[in-house]
Amino acid sequence: MTHERPRARSRLLHQMTRSLRPPLLLAISLAATAGAAAQPPRRTAVPPPSCSAVTQQTCSTAQALGRGINLGNMLEAPREGDWGVKLEPVYIDQVAGVFDTVRVPVRWSNHAALTADARLDEAFAKRVDQVVDALLAKGVHVIINMHHYNQLSGNPLHPNEKEVDPAVMDTRLVNMWRQIAQRYRDRSPRLLFELLNEPHGRLNGEAWNTLAPKVLAAVRATNPTRAVLIGPGEWNSVHELKKLRLPPDRNIIVSIHNYDPFDFTHQGVQHLAKPFPLGTTCCDARQRKAITDALETARQWSAANGHPLHLGEFGTYEKVDLPSRVAYTRFVRDEAERRGIPWTFWEFASEFGVWSPKTGEWVEPLRRALLD
Ligand code: BGC
Image (cartoon, rainbow, N blue to C red; front, side, top):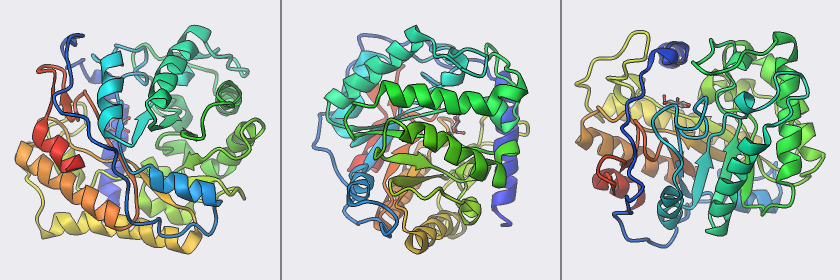
């Protein structure tokens, strides 16, 4: 517990102060093309630690998630483009050419009625359809989630984020998922739903254990067997797995996030309340232990509880020195894979990115650390 507390606090402060962050990225060149030749998708060779609590299909789906990427800071900005990067068609070709899975964070909550029924904005939903269908057509697995519904976890709003009456907050989550699930009910089983990115704050512990089954029930009304991702509290911390109580459902994959060592991965991020100075390298024995301890905690939980895992986020800020970013990335990848944990790297083309919109090319050493 000792090491995750400052990290959890930092994450909280990070989110609380994100509104101070100016958009960092410049306009993106539409003419940008992929720098790397497409290669056949790679899958995690090691099977999940256990699949005793899931169906054979969900076990296979978990394993097929393999190596993936987050199209971050795009559809989960308050409005697409607000954070300097839009989900360009060329990105779909690039990521689908080299990864097995694409996680698409989506801020549905800012594109739905503010009332309890949370009727989805059709133009925004069509935009998500476009992305989901283009990715599915490429043959990859796709994860869509509910990202940055800030009020739900008790966070302040981002600029351009609409406030809702606290009395309807939770019901809106259920009703948004009812509509999303209905909308995608006939899509390939390669589409997965993740109920909520990084529950924390007011949702920690029992609050999430009580709300998640209601959300899942809304999904199950139309998608009885689709694989659904649910993660523990404290920003999907592995240390909270022991508090997670899952509904009795045989198609749940458990999502974890890990940015340990946080003072390394988030150094230089200016929108943290107390930014970490630059200059921390990676990975010495203490840092490696922080990473392997977290992954091992998760593996043991999975082995004991029968749900396969997915590491939905790990990554480093762009100002971290490149050789250390590369060493960290390869180390986390290898340690996750040897434990049968598929992953999606945070993220593609923004501040933690593996692809540079400025040059229109992959950050090649990082790409290799993920895929070679
Ligand atoms: C958040 C991002 C953040 C990243 C790294 C993600 O879960 O959604 O806003 O940049 O974590 O801190």
